Length: 355
Ligand code: UT7
Image (cartoon, rainbow, N blue to C red):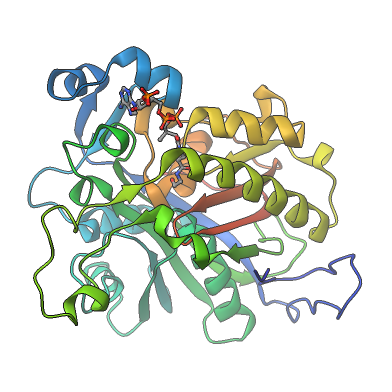
């Protein structure tokens, strides 16, 4: 396992010092936008076609409704809407790079980000996808911060979009009631580490020995190279929920401790926890271990379910638009998911209009 510090600050631990970004090279949130497709599926809709109940879904996951794509709608369609809103929010017409976090690209090849960039009028910008499942937004933020720190880009549009319902088995009650579709995006610009919106150190980690806990077995080179067509159902997303649950709590809690420490903060300084909306019980346990009281926890899982990589920026955008997240708040972001992969970072919420 390796933790990667993408931005500034001393780690406060023994070992080599962590260099901060050169002056003017911190990554600063300048705009934020989100998008969910209009179609809504309720727990009652799921009860009608699966061996499940509204009561089970609410008490085990905290979810009541979720948004789903209509047939023919792809991840890029969600990403373009969220990306456009983030650019408008920032008052910026452009970006030098587009980093798209997704587990549901429009197709295996090429990446979806160049298509999204072109549709946003950003032809010519660097554009690539990041595959880190539900932690994708934090991996993309760290990547974007690195592009800015290195001077490769002045402005990076980070989009996280997933159309999970396109890979979930609609007959599998263990995943179909949880995963949903949506997108969120932030525009990052070069700035100073001490200004509002500047990302703190991003802590990232992974454990590939447990890759089997969350996977889509077919569709990649492992099965294709055998020359044998995928068995029925192998192209669907699968999750071992109970084991995943345990690791989610452990790793999000530990990553939060490290991110807060590396930012030179204490947990008591945190005004808002914005955790990947995996399951309301996981979020409550993580917050409890961090001693972050309920009024400091942001949550929208009841309305949107688990939207994969999109979860955190969608949460931030909705919370900011509704006033639950306000300028000046110290926010702690954390995520966990397939890979396994996890991460956390901090920032002070800037004056931005969330769209
Ligand atoms: O976003 C990426 C990371 N993902 C996560 O972090 C998700 C982690 N895991 C979870 O959120 C939870 O494990 C689940 C929500 C997936 C499942 O909740 P659980 O409390 O861990 O339930 P379980 O898997 O232990 O299943 C309990 C029972 C089982 O029945 P038995 O064996 O006790 O008779 C399941 O068959 O609930 C049953 N069950 C259901 N019952 C009604 C499983 N799914 C359903 C369902 N409706 N949809």
